[in-house]
Length: 378
Image 1 (cartoon, rainbow, N blue to C red):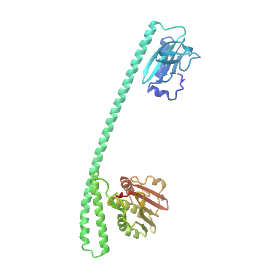
Image 2: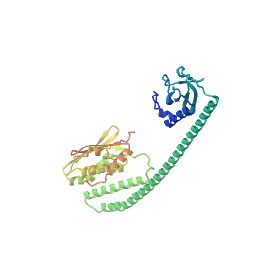
Image 3: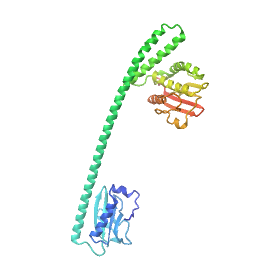
Image 4: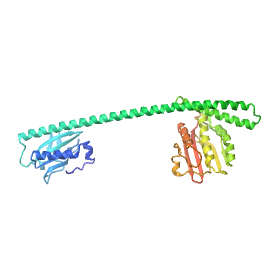
């Protein structure tokens, strides 16, 4: 087999699956059946000259790369090889044409050979068309089976997801019921405790229970909510820090707080903002050694509220930072935790069309930055 093509695209693409060994086999078969001095298989693409793919016998020394030129009047043979070519037969395949040329010196085909030649190409074309049809039928059948399997997999996954969602809603509902007696108990204690400090602690407990119940109720009715309500992020941050104040003091952590005096309304509900702040403060508390420093600031950045929580803790390795907001990923395994908190924070922030990032150096602490869209001014 010889390759004389200078075409830019690979010839295999033009075959669309027609095996090169088949082309060469037919070429040698023609040479043997018609006692030809030489035979050629010439590939012809639309609007392109033909190129020789295979040859049998002895090619003339002056034989050109493209011996045929097709016009509206048929095939035109180059003058240099016109005396050698005595027959041309063509096979159509997937938009391409394979021209088979028979060359014999001073020995034209007899009428019987011509009829046999034409009959041979008719049978080859019929077999080729049937093979193409069978290939297409098999491809369509395979695609249909693949589509059925994918549809079945999607249905199984949808059913599994629905079952998990229903189970999750049931758990949320049970949690609401379990919290209700605690809410009643805090209300009863508020009427009996004379100390304002103790009363303040009870009010914080009641407020947190209320937020948790609101969040659980929203999760039970997920998908039926409209746009996110607005809330004052500055107030929620101040209240949440008050809850964590004693925990920071017990670990002898210095706390620097920079909050705006005026309200800063974001397009989120109180439960979401509280969850974000609690998770960030919890991590700062866990990963900062006693005597360390924690800084909390809230401001604006363009059309967003910008919350920053910095700590002087152990820091996070660079390879972990890129995956820190994925489920189960943790900066350190020797500290108690599940690796779910930051993933939950990232999920909430993305749902609210905000942003979250981390900047950390091992041994020098970490800084978490959260952006939440501000409520548009009317």
